[in-house]
Structures are given as structure tokens and as C-alpha cells.
Image 1 (cartoon, rainbow, N blue to C red):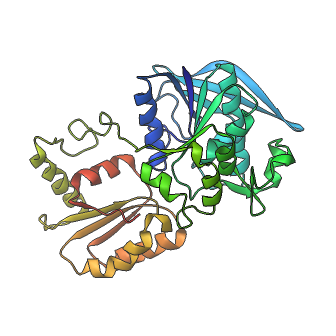
Image 2 (cartoon, rainbow, N blue to C red; image 1 turned 90 degrees about the vertical axis):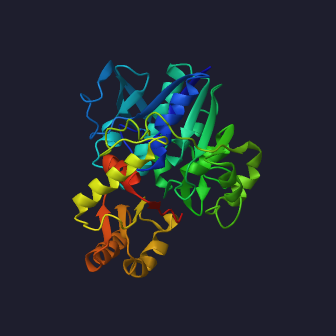
Image 3 (cartoon, rainbow, N blue to C red; image 1 turned 180 degrees about the vertical axis):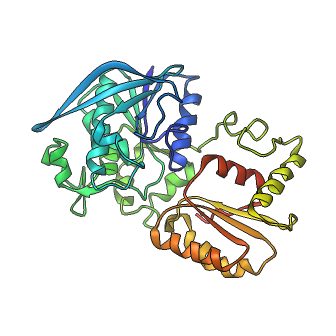
Amino acid sequence: MKVLFASSEMYPYSKSGGLGDVAHSLPLALREVCDIIPVTPLYRFIDRKKFGLHSLGRVYTLKMGSKTYRYELFQAKESDTLFVYNDILCETEVLYGYDNDGLRFGLFSRMVAEIAKKIQADIVHLNDWHTALAALFLKAESIKTVLTIHNLAYQGLFDKKVLKKLAIDKKYFTMESLEFYGKANFLKAGIAYSEKITTVSPSYAKEILTVRFGCGLDGFLTKHRRKLTGILNGIDTVCFDPEHDRALYANFSADHVGKKAANKKAYYKNLGVKERKKPLFIFIGRLVEQKGISVIAASLKDLSAEPLEFVMLGEGEAETEKKLSELSEKYGNIHYLKGYDEALSRQLYAAADFLLMPS
């Protein structure tokens, strides 16, 4: 069985959160039971030389309406992973947040569908809204599609004008397909046309059928619940192994957990904290309401009065970033680090005594 695994981000090439980690680790696990080929965009910021990527030597074209788009396929030298390059999709500084994201990932979904046909895939595994339209593009083919919903809050909502750009017939702009309160909903198309839908845990599969956690799609998901299954996310224990992780100040294991303290000592030295015995609390994540960041922000004054250090690493809503920066300057034991750094996040996990995850 041949599976094409499509994701808009994939560690170590690109990553904004958990989707990138899963897109790295899940194909590795699935290789034990099937022939799986991951595919992801070749963004401008990916270092082709560092990862040994080479062109497969052919430029393909996609005709959508009156326009023709070109794309090229690349491959990692010692891997089956495919990379799609198209200037509209890939010539960006960051992954998401552009006015033309609908066109960008609509194109990516169309390319995924075309690649699936070229390699004669039996199944295409889609991930979140960025690839969900591929289920619509493949609905007339013998290729089956599976859609994994990692985060229902992000659905790919765009002005319906994007459908014309993607040459999607207006007959699909209905409540049973793409239409969502006057906008085009890419994730909804994936739910409607995929043969199977999975989520990142059995409990999340139940939660998204409720009004509280359904993000407006609870009724639509309930209609398609026969296709819905929750499968608990795992972790790549080779990649995320503190005994061999080169990013850490000191390696440790479950059998020699005492060495973990060296990571905290080294991090406190870099942070300029003299009292090394104070517990270290950390938060790593996107600064959005869904992650519970408002709960943390409201607690910082109280936390600052406690004998502890608290480090937050992340980026997100501008107002939240500004507020955390101001509080970080106000309180000496509260530290906000804007952005995301993979090595630093691993160092923080290794150094921390407590992890806050209010989501």
C-alpha cells in the first residue's frame, strides 16, 4: 500500500508547532506497515544544501481557469520525502499569515492531488486545512483520502473569490461542502470529502462534536461522525531523547535523572539568576486564547511574588506579546522570550522543574 503524507510543515525543515513534529514522527512509524512518501512545501528559508535536497529535474504545470502555475519537485538525498516548490507558495519569510494564504495552500492541495496521481498512491493522508482541499480534488479518483484534524480552531476561512482562482466550481459553495457563513472553509471540504477523519486523541474526537469545542463545525462533524476516529498522538523517542540530544547542556536519562540538574544550572547562569535552587516554571507555545495564555497573563503578578523563575517562549497575537514584554520588564523573575527556537525549547524542557500548559 502506497501512502502520500501531505503537510504544510515538517520538522526539521519547517515548523510552527505540533503539526510539524507529528509530520516528522508519524511517517517514520507508519513506514513499518506501508510504503509512505511525505510531501511538504520547499519554503525559501529551507537550506537546500544543509538538508541535501536535489531537484528531480522536471517542471510541472497546473492549469486553473485562465492561469497556469508551474511547480518543481525536490527530494532529500537519503529520504523519500518530496518537496514542492512554487514561487507563490514558497517565497515567504514565515509559514502563514499572508493575504494570499488561500491561493497558496489551495495550490499546494492541488499539487498534492496531482502528485498522488503521478505516483499512483492508494491513500493520501491530509493534515489540517492547508491540505484539506485535496480531498475535493481527488473525490472523482480511486485514491482514498484521510484527513487528520490537529487543531479545529484553524479552518482556512477565505473570501469565496478564492474558489474562482482555484478553478473550483461554484456548485461546491454550499452548506454541504465549502460554504461557512458566507466564506469558503477549506477544512470543511476535507471533512466532507475524505473517506476517514482522525484527530490527535480519542477525547478530542469527542470534544469537537460539542458546541463548546466544535468551533462552529460541531453539527457538520456530527453529521460525518461515522468517519471520525480519535488516535492519540505519540512522540519520536529517538529524536526527542534527552540522553542523546545535542541541543542540551547536559544529557540525562530516566536511569540517571540527576544529571538533569546541570541543564537548569547552565540555563540559570545564562539568565543571570544567582539563586539556583529556585524552581523553574516554563511555558512554550503560541500566544493565542486557545492555548490559555490569558490565564497565565492574569497570574503573572501573583507568580512574581513567589520564589521562582518563570520563562515563556512563544509568539502570537501582537497585544499579548506587548503585554508579556511589559510584565517581563516589570517583574525580575518573569521572562518573556519572543519567537520560537527549537534548540532553546529543548533546553528549557530539560532545565524546567514545572511545565505550564493551560490549554
